[in-house]
Length: 382
Image (cartoon, rainbow, N blue to C red; front, side, top):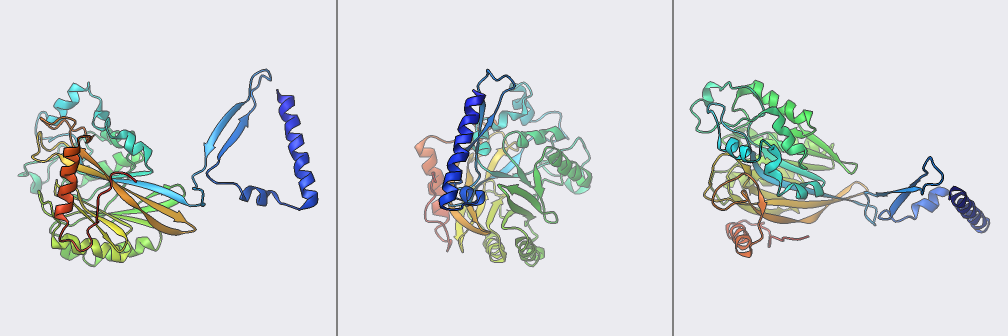
């Protein structure tokens, strides 16, 4: 078999030699004409010549036009674990039903996140063993913490990035915040906050992420946010900004949300992802950039039966060619934050009933009617 392969290779070389006599071609010129979409094969010869060669196929990252296509998913609040002031939590009870397997939460969505190129969540809580509670937090109804190894719930289920600017990230103080950042770093999840840019490289393209907690802080951020974004855009081709903003249980963005979202785009943001309201809010397309005012909840251990368990996963695509970034549209994946309808089991699940899907579509469309740049429709497919 090896002799036959060698003979074929010699014949191919001879053919190239004959062609070269007619027109001189370099190997670079020959290879440059290849379609980047073509699956390339590498032949591995076995040690035993009686065995057949093994062919390993590798697919190029490039599209047929030489561009790179990047698919990004965004979700709302990701809150797991419980309150360290209490013996057990509703999350612990559900975890026990799955024999302690923390990955049960992602069983119905992991395939979506493993299939995209980058998934970003708003991680709202702490990853720490600390039980310390700052004085200003002691009267809070909810505090959230989980063991540091819970970070694997993200890394092993297709989540590559987390926004760490929200009103629960400091539930156990500064040291616990550092624990949270370290836990994410240890499993390869990139985080971002208002002072630290998170950078992920996807298919050779660097994507920068910034995050801000806007609640009652707008006056301090009107100047800072545009400056930060402009500085990031000068270094990175794609900049994504997360905002924790707005009013809880609101289905419409506030005037401050709209102003800040558009400021971010004016400064160079390529995508804006919002959360905090625990409700879905409409999407704008402002100057060709999507502003998702609220992605609602995703995996939410704060309530055993929220009054509204509807939400959606936002997906968009960017095409990058010769340093130029273009937006390739978006779609939404309607979900319920539970696989059950009678209670919250913390398992986000894609909706399949048309009535439930239509309800989400109608809610988004109706609450966006007064937004000047609201999208015309909410596609479910590319």
